[in-house]
Image (tube, rainbow, N blue to C red):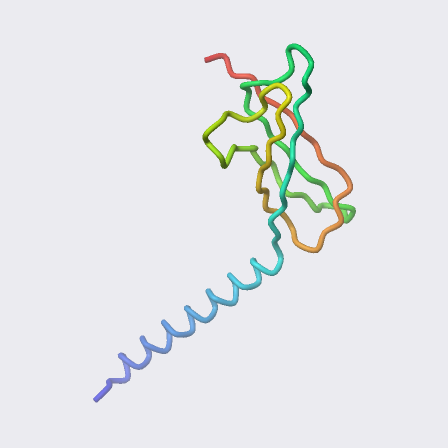
Length: 110
């Protein structure tokens, strides 16, 4: 036989789980995964070992992917070598028309 407290606890867990699933679903619907290809020039001195970041900006005011560090998913070779094309997976807002992409690097002294 179930007590009132046990049923209340079970209902509360069920409601919390349902709310969590709905929040997760809404986040998945509102986000997308983009493939970003970066082509590094082949000229002498091209390429970098620095940290490279990017941010995508949408047509709608305030729409942005946020600052994203481009990390190599394929760890067999370091990214941004001279003459290379590197691919990165970047998450951002789904169903967005992007108007600008800003790319920058941060040099490290150590």
